[in-house]
Image (cartoon, rainbow, N blue to C red; front, side, top):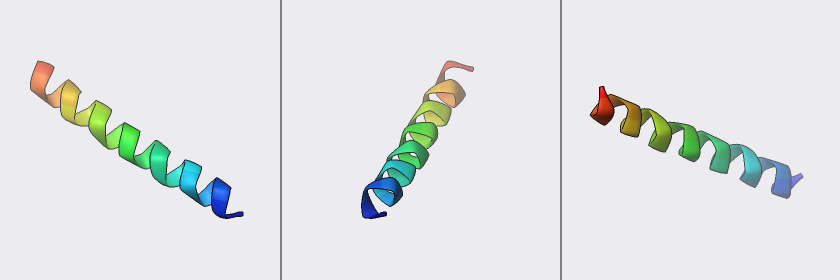
Length: 26
């Protein structure tokens, strides 16, 4: 259960990082 939650949090952080990069590129 905790492992799944950690994966979800990591996914959210990666998505945020990706969006930040997209904003910089555009």
